[in-house]
Image 1 (cartoon, one colour):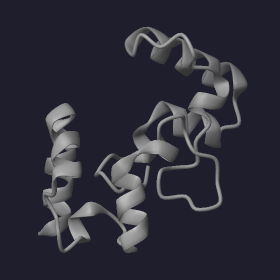
Image 2 (cartoon, helix red, strand yellow):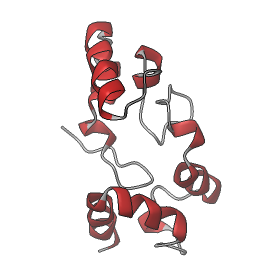
Image 3 (cartoon, one colour):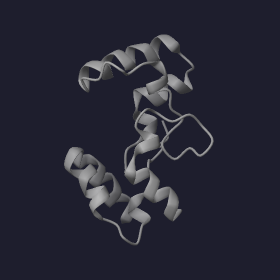
Length: 113
């Protein structure tokens, strides 16, 4: 599977929500939503919350958090393909993501090389 790197360094193609959306499989999306309801303790997650064409999509469907994501908004406004390409790489916005998901930093560092 080809990687689809989000602004923050996540691989959208590895995400079950993205995979279920691309497969157009409502039952799979419901299983993902159920898992996320439990994992994130958010009873509001539903099929639409996990319907996503990838974070960098400008015309597709976005998952529940993408529209409010400060990293996504910043990178899109700067016109960079991901934070590793930003002249202000390692700013406080992306550092907050690194604190939650250290693997994102490793992904972006690999892109910087």
